[in-house]
Length: 337
Length: 302
Image (cartoon, rainbow over all chains, first blue to last red; front, top):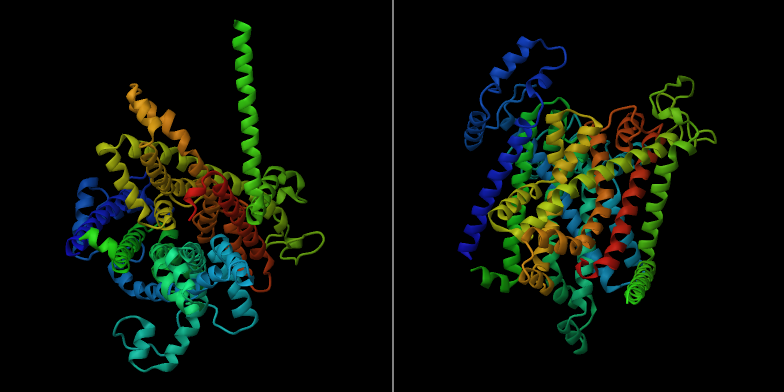
């Protein structure tokens, strides 16, 4: 098992280096002039030149790559062309917000998607099943940003039940940082009003971001459950008089969970991509909104940083899923070791 | 003698045709048994028809070209303007209908470019293999390890916003999906006995790859392509919504939603209807792709 884990971690490193090469290629090799774009349409040639020299864009590609990689190893993601902030500081400020959003969304997607998928399979072709299937096909097709807007329209603007966007009300007291995760810090500091406000702001973005994931988790879990329920050991358990949902959940769900787990890992990564849209809609101060705003002002350094962070998290999630596999399925563990 | 050969050939051709027709009927029956697939087909046909005849059925064809009618801006849905009007008085219904044509182009370009790059690379990686194949797969892995939307945003931020750049960006990050799909399929097929036989009689590797393997990979490619039509349209609309894709006056659905957003909640129709258009289009291609998979590639159903 240790050898297996070590091998997978090594593969992660290789993949990460590949991602670095690709993001670098995208931002430096694609015909385009980042310095001119960042300087704006009215900039003089001299200003563009200064900017280019300042950011090392006049050096050879190889040198730039080495400089950038060395910086990354020290945790230096470079400087934003527009705000002159260090991208590492910005990422450290925005990432916890996105992490909270994605984690809550994933929890919601699993908490609703897995049981619904199971019920849908057990009560096949009943109204539960039909409803779940409509939900699962809709989830893939509905544009997340539009769903978010419609939720804002109905729930925030018409009904006034929840805030329109943002992370907290302006007047809400911020907890002194411990983990930098706002909701966790609010709990640790016992600031219940802040926690309540934070949760109220989180509901709509979390629902929006989780919907596509919920749909695909539901779909995979339903398909796997249907297959598992026809296996001999389930028939055997039923023949021996064991029945009811608890047995189904205990015996069948564990096996159906393996492909579902893959989907959960994949969906974690796609959700990180979805933050670009959902955070834009709800004005949620995370890395998605940061990437979008930077891209809109042609500031490629933060975009590169966000791409690397999201890629790294996605790869890490896949690694954890593979290790989870080995834990759920002893056969894989033995061959892997 | 000659006539006999001809009549035999004709009979062979006729029987082939009859078999093909029987096969097609069988496929149609499998497809038709599933209500969701039929609904998907209906939505796709509706989308294609609207995209094809759009310019001739809309009430205000000039409204997609950047005209301004301030006298009728932000009007609620009415008999004259089914989906209302936007902030410069353009008819939202007209723009949504014409958006179908644009979306069809977007979907086709992205899917075709991605498949054209990805399929040959996948065949090479799966059958020719070697160091080249290994290299192709490693690059593919890296691309697949980042959500397509994030990479597309990175590409557009380097190229500058616009509909053409957005399509280019999405296509550039879309092809690895085809490599992965075709590589797996080609690897499996290369173990089949007819490939073995071709190799035994001395057919070259490239010829085996493209003449014997590729046609047998077509079913999953078609299934993926039909699903991708929807997903590519959705991704392009996402870029449009962010502001990195189509720019006004292009009647692109994502960009329309993005502009309409500033007029919520009072002028809700401005972003509501383009969103429904995206939803039904993507839903249609998804359900249709599912149905196609049941027919063409029943084993790979997930």
